[in-house]
Image (cartoon, rainbow, N blue to C red):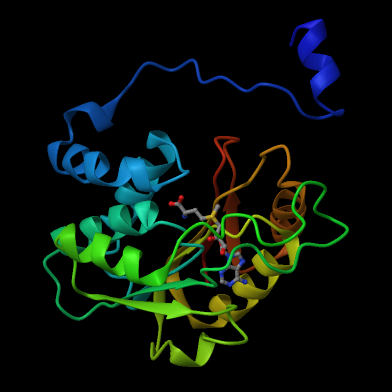
Length: 230
Ligand SMILES: C[S@@+](CC[C@H](N)C(=O)[O-])C[C@H]1O[C@@H](n2cnc3c(N)ncnc32)[C@H](O)[C@@H]1O
């Protein structure tokens, strides 16, 4: 970190760069096709989208539907949906929940967010975007999750949950709604982990390391994975 960078970040934060060279995403034509459709509709970078793609591609033996909370303009949902469609199954639903009026539940643990950020989207546009992307096995839910739309998730079990909600309390509430429904071997992916401005999400995920029913994997790439082990 340079001296000028050090002035920009508080202790414990600074630029993180990846120094590996392996780029499997460049040779994965179905992923690249999905990414070209999704990239103008997402705040999530290609590395994290590829991680979502690979995880959904590995759900063999893990029963249950899929849930994303934090859809915004539908880009990460399009990647998850395309990976799901490629599995060739007809029995898994992708539930996509957002307020469509922006971030909620910002609090004292969230130094950047105040509420209402990322409200520049709407459900109808996202629905049309996903249909145009060739997806059909999804349900869009409008409202605060889980309080207003959790009951609309008709899933007996979940295999995968993507939580991209920016702040502590929403991350907490979504996780504790999803976790009892998550199959063994299922995964919760937290976006926002480690981002300066999303300290609340990082703080919440770090509390999960105490649990005995999961493995927390956070490679400081902006994602934390919580894998159900029992
Ligand atoms: C950073 S954006 C999501 C980005 C998106 N995944 C993408 O591909 O770019 C965060 C979204 O979370 C939504 N959100 C935050 N807390 C929520 C909650 N408790 N229930 C529903 N939506 C929520 C906001 O409305 C916002 O659209």
